Length: 447
Image (cartoon, rainbow, N blue to C red; front, side):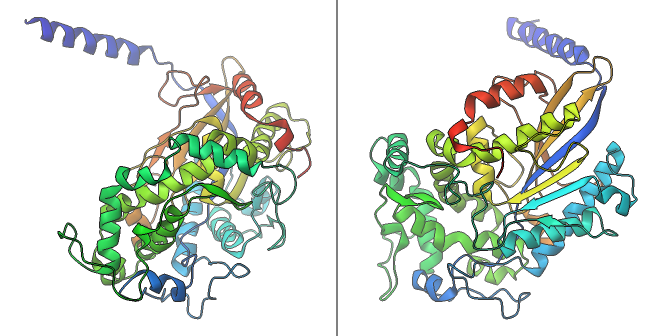
């Protein structure tokens, strides 16, 4: 046997020993918090704006006849297919939670132990209602939310006055991540920007030289990228990067909603191609919401409520600053991708699912927090995973079962997770880490 083979054999034996040493999972699920993004929606911008960026008109979503034109006061809405996918996802979690013993199958009785909270926009409350229709189909579920156009401190603590953002500090924090040269992003993402331009202006990808921008059309890839103070909802203005994101925003939704292939980026992008160009969009979200200073200000209140809810369930004693009550076995919390990205940035969480780029908060995707108790030691642990339907499951509205589930990935909690297959984190240690990362000045015990 050669030396390299000896080393390989030793490595295999070591791995086998490690796997053999993994203890059996003797934990029992006590509570689950499902922190999800809204489902498939209509575009964020009206076609009258989008058509300025392309030579071909953007399609209209056919399953939402007469859907309102997005404006600041009338945002995008959940599509009919998006609602159907949320109900399928809720049905999957119904099966899983029944298997785990948190639901009994008696919807009326189970509803008393289920708490729903959603941001107040119709898109998000609609998502929560559709998810509830799959989770508890025979029950009437109350979705707790603050009226639209009113800031909910859980999801938007800056506008609600719970958190105070220093906009100059926010811009400096983002600019520092870019080496004070945000325009360098154009070279870092040159392949994606070239592909985006070719799709919008309808010429073959890789054509050299690239044609000039058509008359009357804005070349979004040529808008300078800069870092300036923004608004509370988007605290840092990244100039051209935001313009690009606006132009490509419909592509994921076109595919996931099931529009004909000829209408998905005008037939020029497959699911893989959409994933590639969305690396630019993902970078925007990373800078806006995962940057440490921004994550700390924007996500501390939401994180505080999630952590305190887990503690409340473990003790059985009511606490302030929580979601639901000590008897809430299932908490469904529905917000936007920005909320999920901000929370992930606060705790430095990462995940990767098939068909998506790293750390993407997919339409309808869920960060799942499981509070489990060891039956041998009594210790409580937190187990986090990310669950989301694939792009094709969304597009085809694929039925989900325990045998054919949506993909999921265990999530490592830095400084906390154990080296087991599910990356468990002792609850006490999770609370200690939360106390380190949460800004007490950006969280309260009421809202």
